Amino acid sequence: QVHLVESGGGVVQAGGSLRLSCAASGRTISSTAMGWFRQAPGKEREFAAVISASGNTTYYADSVKGRFTISKDDAKSTVYLQMNSLKPEDTAVYYCASRPTRTALTRASAYDYWGQGTQVTVSS
Image (cartoon, rainbow, N blue to C red; front, side, top):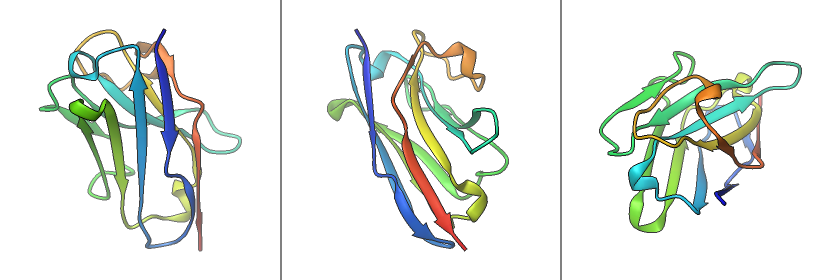
């Protein structure tokens, strides 16, 4: 059984930073692609950033490119999302996700395990 536990969310002012963490168990993240997705109230879940198993390939949504950085520490079995220059429109529940192969994909349907999510609120 794969378990993903997110942490690091909170309330921050616009322009501030947060770092989200996703602790994974039950699946070796050095062998699988991981992703961060987000869902704002009244909106569908959308991709934010994904990383391949090797860590060499990353993709970012246009809305977060240049501000967010996805990374991982295989030894700690943890994936991170560093979020800088936060905007009110970044307010959402952020979910960590894992897929069973090495290739990073941006569609949510490619991921089979999800965490419970962590709330990020950016005030103006």
